[in-house]
Amino acid sequence: MSSVNEIRTAFLEFFAQRGHEILPSSPLVPRNDPTLMFTNAGMVQFKNVFTGIEKRPYSRAATAQKCVRAGGKHNDLDNVGYTARHHTFFEMLGNFSFGDYFKADAIEFAWTLITEVLGLTKDRLLVTVYHDDDEAFDLWKKIAGFSDSKIIRISTSDNFWSMGDTGPCGPCSEIFFDQGEKLFGGPPGSADQDGDRYLEFWNLVFMQYEQLGPGERVALPRPSIDTGMGIERIAALLQGATSNYDIDLMRALILAVAAATSVDPDGPQKASHRVIADHLRASAFLVADGVLPSNEGRGYVLRRIMRRAMRHAQLLGAKEPLMWRLVLVLVREMGTAYPELVRAEALIVETLRLE
Image 1 (tube, helix red, strand yellow):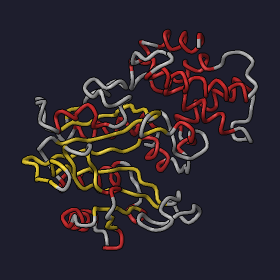
Image 2 (cartoon, rainbow, N blue to C red; image 1 turned 90 degrees about the vertical axis):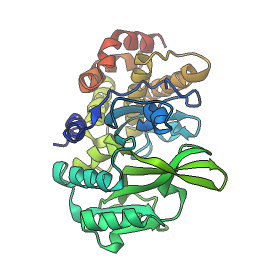
Image 3 (cartoon, rainbow, N blue to C red; image 1 turned 120 degrees about the vertical axis):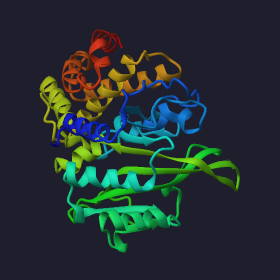
Image 4 (tube, one colour; image 1 turned 180 degrees about the horizontal axis):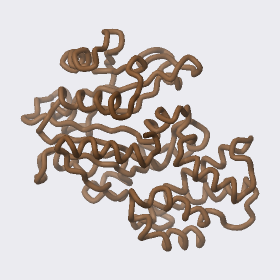
């Protein structure tokens, strides 16, 4: 089990078997948060549940959430195509507890899923915890059998999550996989932590405090869990790929670009193939969620994404519009998991062709 579709299904079935409500991805245009341009994490649709404003008929949930990071604080646009892991569109798998289970179960679930269901090699896994989170440290030792050296204490904001200047917050624990000496990089917390050797693929956030103001923090009456795992990253690990662009889903899109342009997908212009594959996903999903190209706001970001892809198609020698011809392949790869793509296919094709 290593294809993107198999991983998504396995994740959701695992948590369904453990009493989680399986919910569809929320739209890329946030319904309840005017401060966000696009949905950029799995917890966005649950923000008001975490703060207590909204009540739901369930206390645990799991999702595969479509996300876009292409504007504001999370703007990866210019890096896309040139690095192993930058995307404008990506999927975030997440499980959530709203005052139900807490650290022990969250860590137990994560460890069971990645080692028993997904089959990652235990001795190549390591984790980080916030520097004073002794509870999480002890739980990882007990549940995973880790030695102290495999549980790295981090004192920075990398391991303390907050919604903003005020609101729910708490320490987090990130799970890493050692991809081996063939790649440059050191373990988290080291001078070389930004290398590719140690790949962070799942973040478990323990929401246990509320930030009332600068220096004023109180314990939440019902601590909660918010986790996020990038499906492209875990797929790369399971498929033995060191780049997200070499996983089955992205490869299918890249090969479609290569077939349409007759340009080697692994040659000197491979970055252009990657840009088009990534931007096709972002463009199609944004259109499916009601965003259309314009000269302001979300529509302007979409237009920039579309036109960046179209420029790279021209760099590959395309004389006629190319993007719209690739929609069929995207729908074939992702339409089962996201039926809105199927419903909006004609609109996506026409929008790309007109632009």
